Image 1 (cartoon, helix red, strand yellow):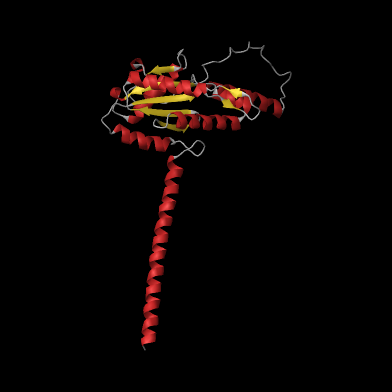
Image 2 (image 1 turned 90 degrees about the horizontal axis):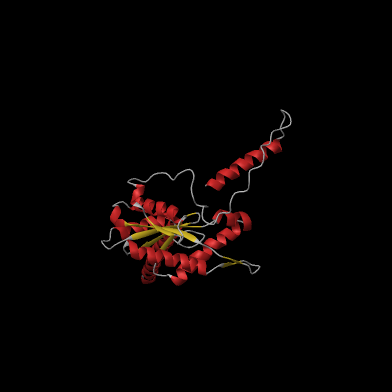
Length: 255
């Protein structure tokens, strides 16, 4: 009888131990899955920097702080030309290279890649100091060119717009101000520009159809040729596709 009781006791203990282990394992697995899900939602897979969701999350916390806050909004000059000339793989490498430069040389600065070649920076600083930080970021990026597999070096340049929280109490509007300033920076000799109150941006508005992303360092357009008219009323599919592709390319160049 005692042997039976001992066996039952041991079996009960073993079952309880197994249940505890399963619950602990399940809890750890859930934590791992939640961590992976958070990472997938908040971190840019290409660069390892926070993505737009991660940026809004972190900037929201900083926005609630009472310290001064300025945002920088940047994109790469002539990024479309880089992709067209060297291919999208090199374009991806350029974005990864910039992320590496920022993490290596400015580890304490918040930086996020929010879309394409667009980055957001944050500084607990007033506008004048934030502009100095923005110029430093731009200098670092251009001072560390991207090395291609063949050994060629490509200099990367950014245009950076800066906006200060004092002009608005809304985070998304502050980002919009910095975005508008970035467009102004495209025509600035320094490549950096503060938000100009003359924009009178009191609400987040869609970007203009004709953007100035490619204005910096753009070669003058080639002279327009004479208009081409078809010889007859028939037109091949390839000719129609070619004309449609040209029109799409012109639209992309404006974007």
